[in-house]
Image 1 (tube, protein in one colour):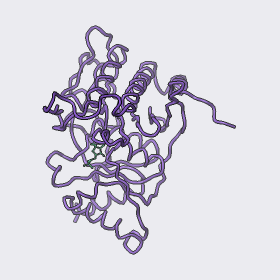
Image 2 (tube, helix red, strand yellow; image 1 turned 90 degrees about the horizontal axis):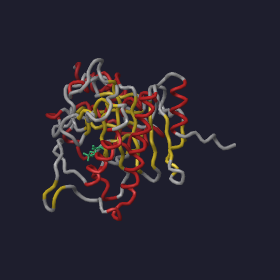
Image 3 (cartoon, helix red, strand yellow; image 1 turned 135 degrees about the horizontal axis):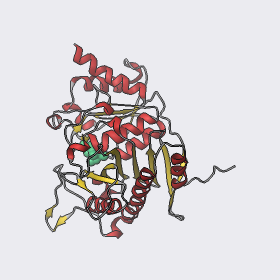
Image 4 (tube, protein in one colour; image 1 turned 45 degrees about the horizontal axis):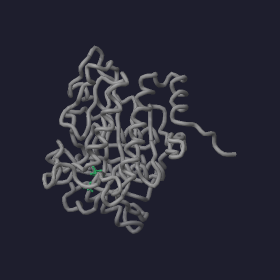
Length: 343
Ligand code: P6P
């Protein structure tokens, strides 16, 4: 018997009827999902869409607040998400990797109670070589009584998230979502144009034999990370007593989706190149939403020294070291760091 066809809307209505979300949050998720469908179409056109390559005028790259060259699709994806979320009355403000500061909802539209943060197109350096990229989003409540939120109102720990998700633009387009009651996967039915529930309650295996890290940074890592990965590479003859495999797509959405699907540990640790900035990946719209999804799927997420979701943010674009995935393996990696610090 084929599984019942449950659309994203049907799933969200059921969550609302169960009292786990309200109508505004349901609308927010549906609006973001609709924007992701538009981004999927633009990304899917590739070279035929005239939107590959760097943004900016001829010869003058457009640089974002991160100091990174923007791709045309970064800018387009950001614009799609801004436009989609402006009019619905569900948001008080939004923040993006591509924008220096947060942005209140235009006065001509009603204000809502939620704050939306997103990386509109993560891994965009992979677009020109046709590797999966994705959109990552995180939802917080606007603080009580705040009408026009500022950056400071967004600086809430990951435990305050009410929803999080990503859309991966790969061989299929998939939306992976949590509203605080498990992590669920939806696949875009391109013929109908709607996301269909394909995995209810994703579960990350507790143990793994697969790690994801950019090995070219090894000589720049801290000592505990050198020791941890060195023992992984030693395999069954080493202290771990088993061989490990490695994967690194260099697109966080793709790497995390694989880990949510079959287990593994993902790490972007501190290294001497990025330590001054606090790490490579951003807390508010990369690490926190991914950590919420992973914990809701039975995994763990840490900075290497602290549960990711308990980090108190100090800036909208704050960077952090990231370890997330199979719970037992994350605990092993954290153990190396805590023992090093205690020595
Ligand atoms: P590196 C993409 O630019 C990104 O932000 C993440 O999606 C990805 O995991 C990481 O950076 C890749 O970094 O240094 O391997 O290119």
